Image (tube, rainbow, N blue to C red; front, top):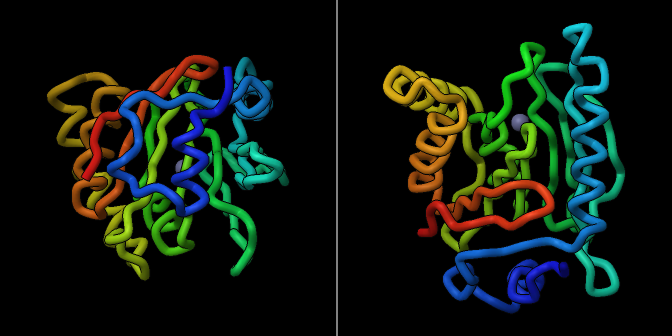
Length: 199
Ligand SMILES: [Zn+2]
């Protein structure tokens, strides 16, 4: 398995978002690095302790790689992309102390991605992988409190109807992608990601 070449071209700025295929994948090494950070996140789950892990994504020698792994807390992780750097985006995990999985992007995740100019943002929660890709029209300078509130409202409304964290995450994440002109892909680790929404 190799990272979809059209995705690499998009990340280099050589291909527009609307030219991407609706199914994408990564090479085994990238999947493995992501899953290793997920396993670290839930290593003490039996004691009710979880920790978010993440890292930065860079293009090097034709590969998309996950580097500079760092841990945060159970609630969050601050990943700062150095300005003018070679990094194209970030990855982080969403563990839950009760063992729930399928937890998608938070409002703060959306604002971090948009404001830092990331082209790609990935979240892993269990076997579930969520991916955001930005368009030329994606705004910057978003207010974190505003988008945190909007995401929470959307998620709670969807959860009351769906009774599934995964289904509610996808509905709420898609609605915010429509607001912010972002693409949303979803799939399983070591497999592939399928387009959920593209502007
Ligand atoms: Zn997050």
